[in-house]
Figure 1 (cartoon, rainbow, N blue to C red):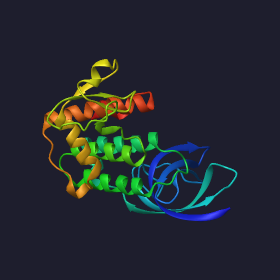
Figure 2: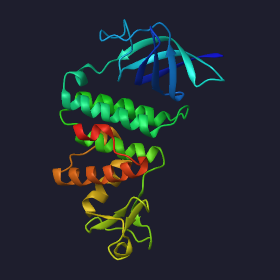
Figure 3: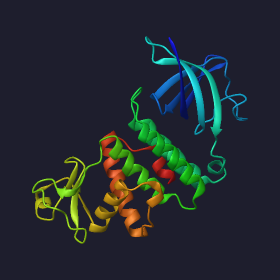
Figure 4: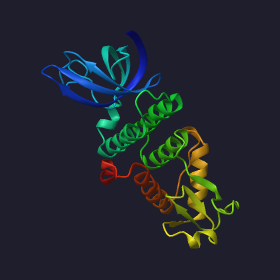
Length: 244
């Protein structure tokens, strides 16, 4: 056994026996982990009686080689993103980001850039008026960091560069775009505009400080495309979609 210290965001918690909890964290140094917090009762009053979801903590845990359940020994609250909890739309947005992290990450799979993106996006949602672009950017950049971002620059079949002024076809099954000519033979597809292609490529390559305003029609098309693709990757729909 060894003691490990790391920044962590609370993803999930459940009661264990009479007085303990099993808490799932997404950590910067160890990826997603499960911990047993002995004697820690759930409480709506906050850290004094439990660790709330969507809190940013510095934690110390004992790593157990022969078990996936580590022992939580210490935690210090860094940020509870208070403004997220006072605004229903922001709260739903933040819990959607949490659901994406929970669904797309594997235990003990470290990804420091993804953790930083997670924290930065939560802070961005908390501080901005409209979280729509922040969510779209997070989805796209998360897919890129995890190796799931589809081909969005060239036709999958003929490899031609796709003109952002023209429409194209997208297929989740084929994991990419098809030009108007090659896409005619693809049965499972959706039609998307050149503006959507250009915006997705822009968001995939830019940091949070460089994000742009996106017209509503493009927001809707990108959102629908991402939901179609994410539901294909996960083979299910996400619970928080109905609240966004």
